[in-house]
Length: 509
Image 1 (cartoon, rainbow, N blue to C red):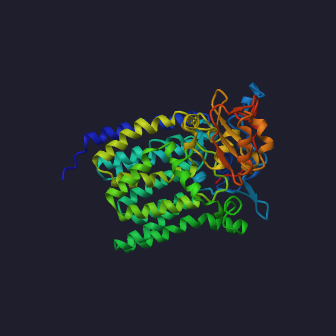
Image 2: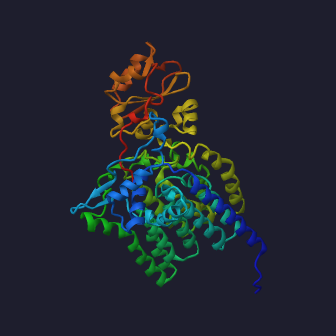
Image 3: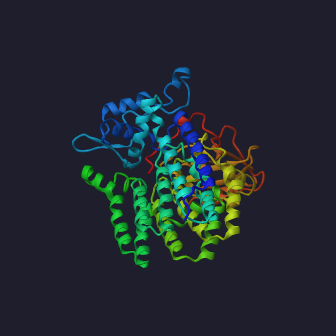
């Protein structure tokens, strides 16, 4: 066998290296912006970088608050509508002896410590460590797929098109653990495809330290290894599951319970058919709103391939989806696609890429460029995307409102541009065209008295509307006839005058 290096491979490596340098340089120099639980993660990075412990001490807190990226803007514009660092730190709980630890585990912040040290050495913004680390995880996953995964080029490129092109790119600057978990999901399915089940479980369980449902991929790796009589791999895959329970042990040791989030912000009562369908079809935060080719490609790939491994992976995804639905805050902060769906995409992309034939793979590669890339245009600049109707949802609500009736929390919070502990109490919620014509109302019995705050109803239609509202024992969508309902001038159907009027965000897992 010839050992002569492949010239084409060398050029591919050179192109990848140049692109990687450019991406890392961009996220090193870009001013970071807090998203989601970013403050909590920034505090953890600082603590780990300073004294190798996730315990938050006063000097850690002061150091982060002193360099918070947007504080300087207050000097130039005291009225600027920007974030300020919380003091004292939110998202933390105290142990009996007074030590403070974050509600979210510290595996992802720990991976950002090298970036924090390098930024400190070279004079970069200390808080850029998270976005820089996200870029490193993204590039590491891409390198493994492109250069370490020995599969046909069509399968490889179809997987890249479905797993990398889209939401994973939008989440790169996001100050949360989504990219960390997503990258480990990519590495896990690549290992699974190579029948390296222990490695699959290792990466899945590492990602599960921040998003526990991903551990289900490690669970299915064990019986798959046993079916192939890979006894050693099966044992090691089961052993790797210990990694997923490390966070539980940590919190039990410090607080006497396995999690600071489960129970406080989760409930199995939240699981529903409505939420399950919204994960696929919702135009604001579901798959169809950002990667519309993916669900179809998964279905076609599964039918064509009929692979036991693919069925096992989809079974794991189903379990992850149900576990994700236990979250009370369903309309959480994110860069478009629901945060929990981001790290499920690699599993779905693998099922599609593995099952599709030559022309199917070509179709998804071209389709991702034509359909998925344009959906990234609003991101990452639109940091409050979870409080706005996204462009596709707006178009449908304008032209065919009966086709889109999302869960109550999604519609209310995106229409009133705020977070609410009880969205039903805020009804009615109204969507109107730019000319003031109302196309969709969300109502429930008892909200009649607040109707005039939002809309003006024609005398002919008012009795029918009031009757329908009074009969709405649960939140109900109403689609009034053209011209029957118009917005009330000054009604809160558009942006609130001051974003500070929003309810204080709840913890989001």
